[in-house]
Length: 195
Image (tube, rainbow, N blue to C red; front, side, top):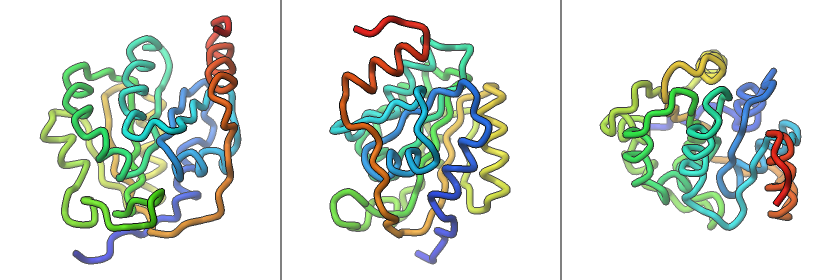
């Protein structure tokens, strides 16, 4: 396969989160969490730790229970592949306020940068399209990232975007790792009492 990963992951994520207001953000395990944290910590960021493959389903639950808010899942191709079956359930439910941005570098970044299935021809945007997602995108330019940010804000259609990024490993910017703290902070930001 030819080289198509052209975007800087940190710049793409920072652009997606620009002017976010009350957007709810769920991050996949590892690099996606580091990228979101590097763009700036926020009480409405729900960082997942030790839950590989769960970001998309957590996003689905939030989108269904918070229909007046934009829900953005930022995850990697390896993490999305772990939760592959979730795409069918998400497509059936089709919450208009859910956007899944898959940072696709074709590698399993958390386990040593081995090639993922995405490097071997599996295109997650095409899989989502086959699952009947109403909007799928393959993003290779920063202008397209800005368009995606507009779709997130509009909350007008379930969307999955495969954001093609370079296979690099920028320094980790670690978000909070205390699960109860993350959960309680997130609940309070939504106006609920901590549990």
